[in-house]
Image 1 (cartoon, rainbow, N blue to C red):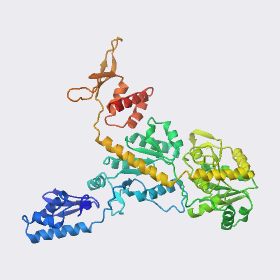
Image 2: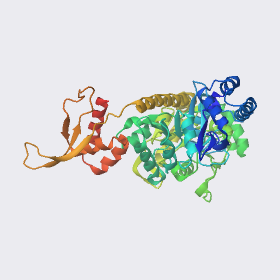
Image 3: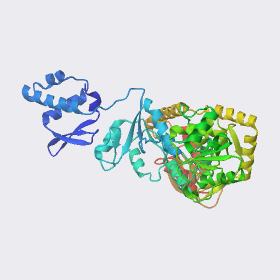
Length: 554
């Protein structure tokens, strides 16, 4: 009758008094002995009805007292909020990050993407958000503090299938504290390649080291995975799940009608008469704002239309006559502006650029994109635009990670505007390419990954530790005249006297012995960071051998 509710209730005794603990609300209520006994019976027989309980205790307590106890307990249980228990096909997710916000006027691509992912997961998942605020929280919030035993118990009782995090947060302590009490997979999304003066790389590598074998880092493009593969040995920890595009919001319109409507919105009828080179992004230097202004000066016969929240540091500049600033527009109007563009110029060289959502949205409207051959943009744009060769910096200067020659951009824009057939072909290719990116497919990939890693976590949590013991000693090789340090690998404990390995002990390098010793309490990725400093010449090679050995004996 109260089977679901009882999962979040428990009783305990303290100084000869009895208490009822509600893990859902983190509340404690004092109870008497008979209530404690009745509750314990309910815990042991969760499907019991009140008549069953009455029959069981009728010989122990007077009927009136028992009746009063049962009524009070029933009223208490009925008054508790529903637990919203999920169906067997639903996943239960804990989100370590902000709740969905209104993005109708947002210019932050990462925020829009994360909100969309959460919305698409909602029909298949029960989603809760972690909070450190103990006061009365929302129905979908889960309070957690390592100093609050009730919150720890509740987190464990909830039986989450996975913990999701929108970015590799710089301060790992709050999330790591939760993971200490959960054996479900952690999935962190890496929305950017790099940036923030190296802080983003450091945060990503920090979480890489903390990942368990059933955790995953999700990246939106192969370019992000390739970038971090330069620093990491375990490539499988990265899973590529591209972003999607909302085809109900972004789709082709009649270009003449779109231009006419935009001309009225910005009060400039030149939009109906001249080729329009559009820019829809934050108007910042690293997003290519300086390139775009120079393109406007070099091409006075074209209109350059900017849709952005502000002109930022450029607002005091002298703009050419063919430059139009439309300001910030609601997301529902962006389709109209994209369709008014003849070309969408996307000259971003910001270090964080990993995908190019605005470029994809323009392509979904059938608009070709001109961009640099930079970061993850080639994967998104494909043959739906023209990519200009550019320099990519090994190290960022400020937040710049590359340089695009403005003259090369200008040549491409003139070629595309001057060749109607080529422009129409690019527009068709852009629409076709955009159709391959779908939010339903993105959410399905997330669901499949969560289920896959959940199964792997279950297998690994049941698996016995098969890491052999290691001892260290001085060693005298027969072929050498001097002693040296060696580690000795002891054979695994056998079954009925049988040794899994052919001998009882083996001698190998100290590096391998150190790795075998540490790997009993640390993940291979944590050890990777360690051996890279301790043994810079051959540490990673030793780690690969040890990992292969452990996979063999698993």
